[in-house]
Each structure stands twice: as C-alpha cells, then as structure tokens.
Length: 424
Image 1 (tube, rainbow, N blue to C red):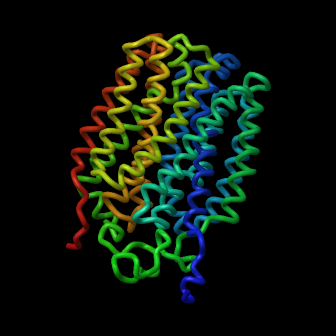
Image 2: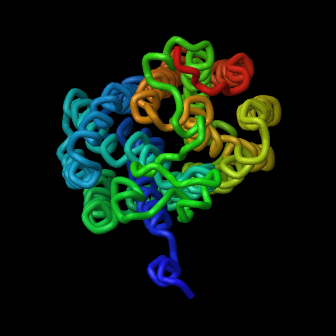
C-alpha cells in the first residue's frame, strides 16, 4: 500500500456534504413549504381570511426566495458558504417562532417574506452549487439523494403539523418548527459544510487526479472537461437553450404550485377527511423522494429532455385521473403518480443548469432560473386560490395545471441538446 492510499479517507467527504444538504432540504421544504397546506384551514378558521389571501403568503414566500437567490449566491461567493448558511440557519429558526405572534394579515405576509430570505440561505441555490462542485460524474445521484430530504420533510412534517394543530395549536406548531431548525441546521453549517473538495485537498467524486479525464484536475476542484468548464453567464443568457430552460422552469413549477399548495383541500373535495388528506400530502411527498432518486439516476443514463418530459407527463396524467375519477381509490393512485413525478421537478432543475451550461457560472445561472421558478410557483399557488374563490371548486385550476405541464414538455424539447461553449 503506497502513501497516497494511506492518506486517502475511507469515505469521500462529499458524502457528508450530501447528508447536510439532505437536512437543509428536509427543513426548508418540510417546514417551510409542504406544511403550509396544512395551515390553510386553521388560518381560515382563526381569522376568517379567504384562501386567496392565505395563499398569497406562500406566493410572497416563493417570490422573495426567487428575488434573493442571486444575492445569496453573491454573498456565498464573497464570504463563504459556512458564514452565510450559519446566519441563515439561525434566522430560519427565529422567524418560524415569530409566526406564533401573528394577529394581522400584513404581519403574516411579513413573517413569510423574512422566512423566505432566511431559508434561501440554506436552500436550493447554495446547496446545489456546493453539490455541483463536490460531484461531477455522480452529480445526478448526489443531488437526487440530497433532495430526498425535500420528500422526507413533507412526509414527516405534514402529518406531524396536522397532529400538533389538532392537539396543541397552529401557533405552537410554528414554535416547534423553529426549535427544530436550530437543533438540526445550525450544527450542520458549523461543523460539516466545506466550500469545495479543494478545501480538503480532495477531488470531485472522490477521484484521484489521474482518474478524471486521464489527467490532473485543476486546483479549484472543477472538472477539466468542456462541460465542467461550461458557459460564462454573459454567453449563456444569449443562447436559445437558456431561455427555453428558463421557460420550462417557470411553467412546470407554476403547474405544480396550482396543485401542491392546495392539495389538502383539493383532496378533501374528493370526500377524504381532513386528517387523511394531510396523510395524502405526506404520502405525495414520500413518493416524491422515490422520484428524486429515480430521476437523478435517469438523468445520468438517458437524454435529459426525455427524462424531463416523462416527469412532467406523469404529473399531467395524475391530474387527469383526479379530474375524471372521483373516488377514494383514484385519489390514492393520483397521490402515487403525482408524487413520483413531482419529485423530478426540483431535482432536474439544477441538473438542467449543469447539463446545459456547466459549473463556471452555475450559481448565477441557477439564480436566474430559480427566479423564474419562484414566479411560476408563487403565481400558481395564488391563481389556484383565486380560482377556488371565484368558482367554488378546484376543477378549473386542475385543468389549467395539466395544460401548463404539457406546455412545459414542449419547452424543454425546444431547448435541444446541450452544446459546448466555444470562445469567440
């Protein structure tokens, strides 16, 4: 055994980065996103607010996340991920607790705007940027596994919040979510997060220098191939692929926002009790975990646009089932199909950025695409609530959602195949 083999760690440190990412996604999605649907009726009963007014809080949350994405990317690049993510983790817990004191609608909106700023610092953009640096060949698997945290967050937090609301109150549910953020996220940011493999003298995927492309890796830890060098931002935004990818990730999250943020009342309309509807939301999130793992692996083995089209198509099919068959059995089939397909949207977004544009400007490009995703998600959630208040049913909202998914399929195929960047 030579000296290099003796020095080489038994487990690649990127595995710990992936586990930390899992925890961040568990919190930001489970507590910040999925649980919101469980709070709609309690807020309606406590304050008499309309569902459109309540849903606007989530729209504000998602829009604020989109606006803050580029800023968080800049701060992370300037001050390092550990500092930014630690401050964000502490702030996340504090803002969750502050929702306890809600008495007015404007305070509720302000709390969710601040929660969006805090969770962005431990959310999609900094975490996916980290994983893109730590992994190249295994990027789809790593991001897919990390984003299972999103599904597990929904699977655990939605039923848990439902139980807490029933036995304590929605106010104490927010306090407990804040304490959970402090207990899980803060230690991860302090003791686990490293900016990239070069910080520990390692290489992406745990490779030795000679294992990547038959030659040494550059010192910054990025890959040496054209895909990993990638497109600079100014060139990417002038490409056709960029705008079609951006359109895809505006449309698909919009379709998802129409359904997901209202799933508990949507499923209740099919005749399922509120507690079972909350369980259905948890199962949807659990199936999303399987979808995240599956679509991450599929993206490594099949053309990206076909994998994305399959993802969006499954969700459109599930909505059609929910529209045409009003039975308890159909609802559970919908949950399985929709949850599995839904899991692919979030995991395929950062993979699309890396797939088409590499890692040179990953954070900046991801920030712009995430801004479009925020517009789509926030507008979808609000439109769904507005359509319910207008028509007294979610039928038209579901038809709209299915149509948007089909449009997203067309958009990703228009992006074509990825092309290497060629300097002028």
